[in-house]
Image 1 (tube, one colour):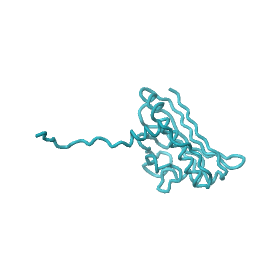
Image 2 (cartoon, helix red, strand yellow):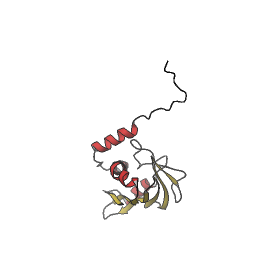
Image 3 (tube, helix red, strand yellow):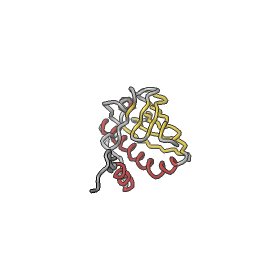
Image 4 (cartoon, one colour):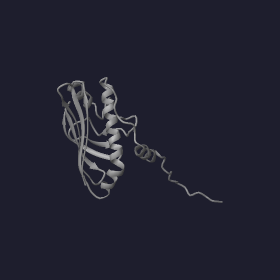
Length: 172
């Protein structure tokens, strides 16, 4: 299945201001990633071409990085996610826009999991990331509230896992 998922938000802030925020992605001073509500983005080294990591079950490697302008990540997992996701800052007549574009081909179970699980969670996460950027440059927040489906999925994901017993239990 061919997927193209685009999020874009316009800001009155200068492109340089948004670019500085973009450059903090995955660092200890990350000012974009909504780590309060989502698995933290982690890379195996400083943001740059070749850095590998991900968030939650999503894995990727930095394919291209132009500081203050754009970052392109290539998916390495989950299986069946074949493509990229990109954060970019683009100048406008007054201010700048921040965009996140996901372009991929899914195969096998990934097609169903994208549609039912990953897409709604992804959309909520990206809009919260844009709100973090807005807060950092003193602009109003605009992310919609989580849908019932997103709240249900998050409840399922956060549910405590059954513990594996290491010793047999006697029933006597």
